Image (tube, rainbow, N blue to C red):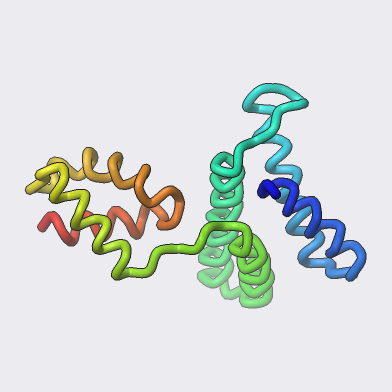
Length: 150
């Protein structure tokens, strides 16, 4: 079952169960996936699971940014709503790497490339993007690379 098929299936289940929040999030997600497919190559296009994960990650990032903004603005009820939506989106993303796994992959990549300074950070980051395949966000990855290249 592809990721898009899973979203469609869960959307139908949410309708039957009358789960308003989940239904809203899944409708938005289905729309975002369809929009990305159309932008890719027309109305009949299908996204690969990798491309679908990128769309979901973008939606999750938007929720994360909204949570931060609402918390800064003292709007806890809106931040809670966004957190609930983020939790739903996270169920469709691959399992994130824990800190130990991330540190190990970064260490191995730095050794493979022979990187020794922060000037080579771009090369290391590019190599890591393929290895972590969406299991770690860029901010966390960048922080770990900087830490290890010091």
